[in-house]
Image (cartoon, rainbow over all chains, first blue to last red; front, side):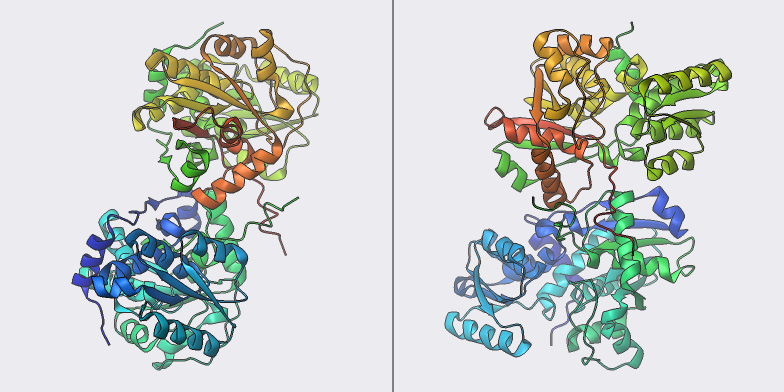
Length: 316
Length: 316
């Protein structure tokens, strides 16, 4: 089981540089006052496809050798990873197949199709997703790129923290959302390798707290059924990400959905940025954890901005 | 009647530099493709108080001599100008009085009060606003700073274009919203003084088209009753701004409210930025005016981001 190191993250940064955005770090005086802390928001909702997921997908796709690439890439995802793989494959000029449950919203399918990927529908149950994915892999001989349980993906997600540490001096802590743990693993590996004194915290919905429970009980918890508005944070840790987080992460902060909604609204109103619920979990968790971060300089990853806006813009 | 020139705009830029943000210019590949043009969005929704209005207010407030400043500032506005005056006066440490119609939403009053300004309520009718404003001026001996019919304010708004031309080379056209005409006058004066070949267009709601009609008929039209979702674009040109626009503006583009909503949604979805309806009028007008700007490099001012988000975030 490969675990990426700082060299792998640095290589990923170089590999994705021609394609990925170096996202800005945003500040807000009023949010600083509210949190009694100095907040530096890493704006991954401004990344291509609107989420950090493009970094890991891009690193994985451009890591393939020519033979692998010729056979194409396969993944299963109804969310940002699917779109990220589709765009990365389009940029490399190779085939992408995305296995998507029939329940996925049309708008997400459209984004994947717009990048030229082939969409293969499956049933919602994980067994059927895996069956259909295995079938596509057998047919195409393609390369599976998992949304988070993949060293190339984790190394790509680590470039968020690599940039953040270049952009902001003297951070006391970094907070990143945790779902399957790809982003948080990449963040923890990178931060601890560069600046072991900076704390690395995961932020997780109370209604999908498997990472919190897994670290607390020191064993991987897989039986929880997620219930949260954070649609990007419903996956469970893999053995690989559990191992990385057990070693390198200082802990997991929880936030309930009301706190997520409130934090999301603050980001809309104060930062004037459109983020999805999953992207607000870090701010929500920090505000709930006060005064732990009082007076501290904290980096918070705004992980994505893909949101159903039909309530704000009803179609006539 | 004072008309500012480029030197006044440059002086304003220096005067407000310690207080105002130099806002970024945002890009979107997908919006470029949609518009068949190269679009450069000047992000004034990221300005302090969430709108370009802070530039003009700040320039006017910091232009006062010490005697004037000691007597304080008076304005009438239920919108972004009121908050901008309140913040600028707070930064200079002087008194601000804002005359606000009783119909103004509580959230806007709160923003003004949060900056420490005194709020004086009046009735909605313009006559009552003027009567109450005159009364406050007589009582305080304060300085009136009009939202747009003021050379100091126009010079301050001109700094938007001054920055934009420093940030983007080779623009073919600049589009800015027009209401009372402060921003568009400052934009037109600045652009034509620096680069006379760059076209300057106003963007105005069809339901509040007094600037369009005024320029077309070559006389100031004041009898139209505004009807548009663009709550920041319901004022009429003054003699001063009409004069400036008649000389320096290439024309006014109109957009209906449905086009404004669609453009606003595009900015939310593609740029991930929160803007108010008035801020979307430039993009809406450009898309309707196609193919006029086909293949052109166009600067578009996103003028503000203060929006009622209760539909997106209903209170439980």
